[in-house]
Image 1 (cartoon, rainbow, N blue to C red):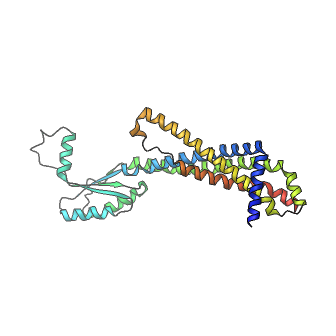
Image 2 (image 1 turned 45 degrees about the vertical axis):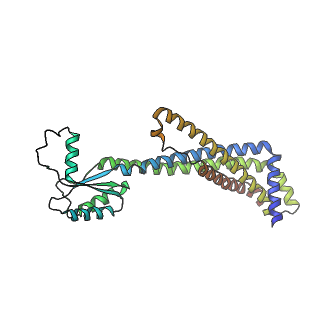
Amino acid sequence: MFDRIHFALTEAFTALRRNGLMTVSAVNTAAIALFILGGLGFMYVALNAKLDALGPQFEMKISVKNRATKEQVQQMVAELGKTPGVSAVKLLPKEEAWQKYRESHGLLADTKDIENPLPDQVVITLAQLDKGQAVREAIRRQPYFDPVDGIRDAKEERQRVLAMISFVRWSGLILGLIAVFAAGTLILNSVHLTVLARRQEIRIMTLVGANHGTIRWPFLLEGAISGVAGGLLAGLLLWAITAYVTARQIAVLGPLESSDFHYPVVNMVLVLMIVGALMGMAAASLSIRKYLRYAA
């Protein structure tokens, strides 16, 4: 077994070194294809993460009935905090709400003798935007929720963000499939040219009695090595471009505005190398199958 592995590795590296121009062409083609695939994938993940991060920015405010005791209000806050899709629930006492209202409207002096007309309020922060309707239903079931003031939230804006998230995810899936198909086609054509240039070598190996596994594995390893090299180049190129874009963004917007823009160098390079290896092996297998079938 180890002899076969050694033979396959030796043949693969020898063929890569002997066919230098074809190897460079295959690696460059894989790098271009994986650069497109990785770039689209990274943009999708980054945009999807930014959209998901919008959830905590959406809040719901409700008023509490005046007849509710402090214990009952605390119980309602605890129950709402356990609702799926809720990240935080905060009680805003009516004294604090009245003070904030007076400060925001510049009425501290004019309203010092006016009795506080505001009720206690509860501020609910969403963790998941798509749970907004379920949270509203949970609020309506609370016995001490005051329906007169209703549920105050940016419902229309939340629905628009949800529609945007849905669009990004579906379009990302479609573009991802197109990118995978395009990358696979480019790598397949490149590896196919390599196999085509060595069809005489395959014919000679079959004539001397080599089995299909002995013939196939060196080509599979060649495709995998070319894909790995292409994935490495694509990942590093994406990192360089992202670093440049980040530097320009910091220069224009400042470091605080750009601190959440990060490129996962190690993870992205590893993923592209693995994808490149799998695509290279698949392309080599498809390309050599025809010649092995004819030789059978």
